[in-house]
Image 1: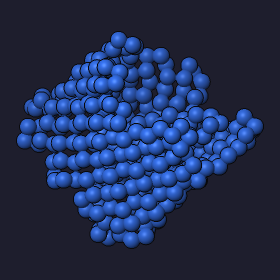
Image 2: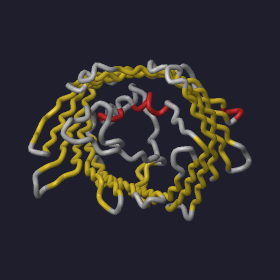
Image 3: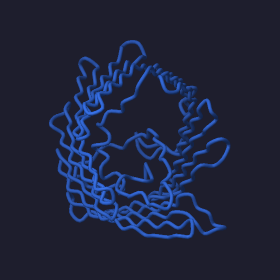
Length: 320
């Protein structure tokens, strides 16, 4: 289920959608469309390939230290210094003993707290062969900011996801999201999303339709609803080069943003390059270098906006 409010779901005007928590999960081995499994994955993974190769820029100096306390438990310290606001975050990750595959182990519990006391937590568990449950919670100033509870039901050739966001049973308010993605052929998948929200004396329902066509080397995906259009194209040029183009257009504001991203991996030099060029006149790139045999990774990022004449540079390091 990943990010509950995927970009395919337009933000309702009643209340802002809860901010998803980014959690790094173990990824199962990728399967080509011609493999035995014809399950299309989840609805919110339609544009995941482009999102994965996009760079994550930051400004200032950032240092991260990871420490494995056991084979199941790990802690993380993150220090971020910049001109606006410096911060410290402490995170922990627990991985259980239920191993479904070499890359899938459950349950997974992830938590992170910053120096202001704000907490983000996520729980993921495979409770049955075809059913996965997730719970995401955020607190701010000791108050519950958002809560999302959902499940993914994985069938042979389709996936059904149900998510409840900020449920208020006493006042009968909250948001309900239902995703359905069906594999029509080994290459073609079609689906839809129904988003229903009730609150502040108002209620509304939004329907979004989606489709994806994928081959071994490229993927084309699109979602269209009342909130706008979201399309992405991903191409794997070779084992080390990947490129993608993504378009997000809002029908309410009549604004659109197009992003072109790329990723170049140089395994012999332990280098990973990423770059981006957007229609908002922003260009950026990042470099990730593993300093073997030391358990240290150096990360450099930089972006420049031609229209605003603004430069943002980040220097980071990851230990462990």
